[in-house]
Amino acid sequence: MLFKQQALLRQKLFVLGSLAIGSLLYLVARVGSLDRLQPICPIEGRFGARSQAEIPLRALQFKRGLLHEFRKGNATKEQIRLHNLVQQLPKAIIIGVRKGGTRALLEMLNLHPAVVKASQEIHFFDNDENYAKGIEWYRKKMPFSYPQQITIEKSPAYFITEEVPERIYKMNSSIKLLIIVREPTTRAISDYTQVLEGKERKNKTYYKFEKLAIDSNTCEVNTKYKAVRTSIYTKHLERWLKYFPIEQFHVVDGDRLITEPLPELQLVEKFLNLPPRISQYNLYFNATRGFYCLRFNIVFNKCLAGSKGRIHPEVDPSVITKLRKFFHPFNQKFYQITGRTLNWP
Ligand code: A3P
Image 1 (cartoon, rainbow, N blue to C red):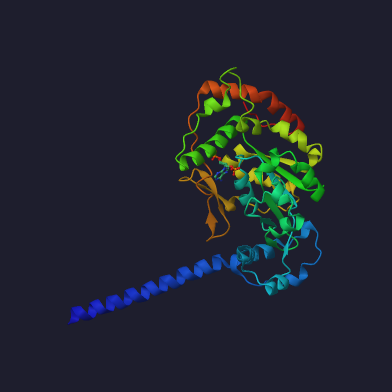
Image 2 (cartoon, rainbow, N blue to C red):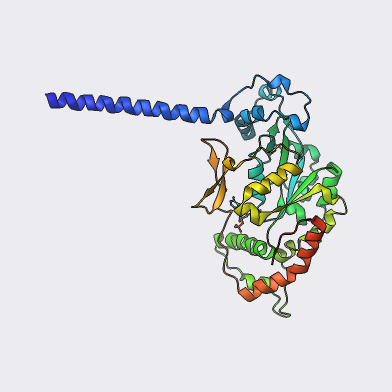
C-alpha cells in the first residue's frame, strides 16, 4: 500500500516537474523570439523622414519577425497600411558572380536590421520575358519593408549577361553594385560541380572537368567553356563600366567570406552607408557543415542549404596550373580596375 502511494507521488512529481520545465523552456523561447514576433511597435509614428544615419535599428530589429510573416504572403491590406509597409526597388544588387558565395552574402547582409532581402533570384534584367513585364512587376516581386530599410536582391546571371548593365542603369543610375568573387579556377570547378550534380540527379553522364576546360586539339584553355568564361571577371566588369563608375561597385572576397566573414561584411556595411550592426555574435562556425552559419537571436539560427558547400571532384593538378596561368593576367587587370588585390595564384 505504502509502496503504491509512493509510486503515485513520484508520478505526480514527475508530471509537475515536466510541466515546470516545459513552461520555462517556452518562456525562454518566447523572450528570445520576441524581436521576430512583436506585432506592432508603438514608436512607429516617429519614423518619418530620417536620414540613413538615424535609422531606428532597434525598432527595425524588433519588427523583423513581422516582416518575415508578411514575406510569406500573409499580410492583409489593412496590416500593410497600418505598418506603413512598402515594396521597394533594390538600392543594391548582388550582380554575381555565380558560385562566388552570392547566397551566403545575401543571407549574411540580411542579418542587418536595415536590410531586407529578396529571397528568390528574380532574373528580371537577364530574362527578356521577365524584363518585358515591366518595372512594376519587378517591384511587386520585392519583399515588404519599412521605408527606412534597403532592399537587396541577388541574381548572379546579371554579371555575365550582355543587356543587364544598360537595363539596370535605366532603372537607377546610382544603384550600388556588389560583386563577390572567388579565386577563378576554384570558382570554375565549383560551377562545374553544380552542373555535374544536376546531371547525376537525372542519371545522366557528364564529361570530366579536364575535358571541358582544356581544348583537346590545342591543349590550351578552352575559352568557349562557360565556366572558364565566367571566371574572366575583368572582361565582364569592363562591360559594366560603360554604364557605371567604379565607385558604384564593391568587390567582396568570396574566399575570405568563407573563412572570415565578419570583416568582409563590415566592408559592405560601410559601402552601403549602413551603421555597423552585424557582429561576431551573428556568425558562428558549424564544424559539421564546415562553414559559418547565421545567428539572428538566441532562438533563431540557420546554416545555408546543403547545396552550398559541395565537395569538388579532384582535378588534374596540371590542368589547375594551366588554368591559373591563364587567369593570371586577367586577375591583374581586375585588381587594377577595382583597387582590390586578392593575391590569387
Ligand atoms: P561550393 O559549393 O563550391 O563550396 P553561390 O551562392 O554564389 O552559388 O556560391 C556558393 C558557394 O558559397 C559555395 O561554393 C560555398 O563555398 C560558398 N559559401 C560561402 N560562405 C558559405 C557559407 N557560410 N555556407 C555555405 N557556403 C558558403
